[in-house]
Length: 125
Image (cartoon, rainbow, N blue to C red):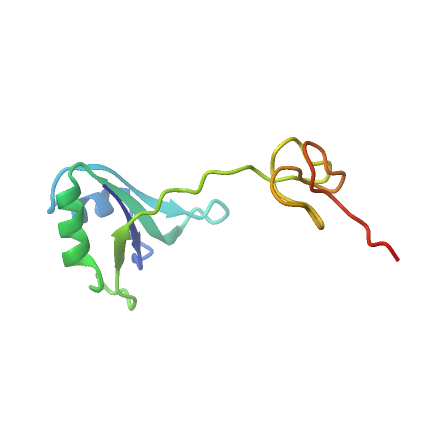
């Protein structure tokens, strides 16, 4: 079971996150999200528990508690799957991707609207 964990103190690392959750069962992975510009924690992470019931126990017992000196309570919930879909369009819009300036529905993308619709559509005056 994949869990989303927010409200982490900024000094918690992957190992500490795993340690918190291993009390509930086997942890497959524990990752604190790191800001790529600063190299510091973003205050949230993801934990994958081997068994769904262990994940549910962790949610029930850890959600809304304060960890360490953090002023914010933890938010522990089942992670949502990433939505599937096209990438971005960009200026010349490759195939697929999202709308563009006044992009049409689906596909297309970018200013020049390559690959299936979308793209810039000037107004008719």
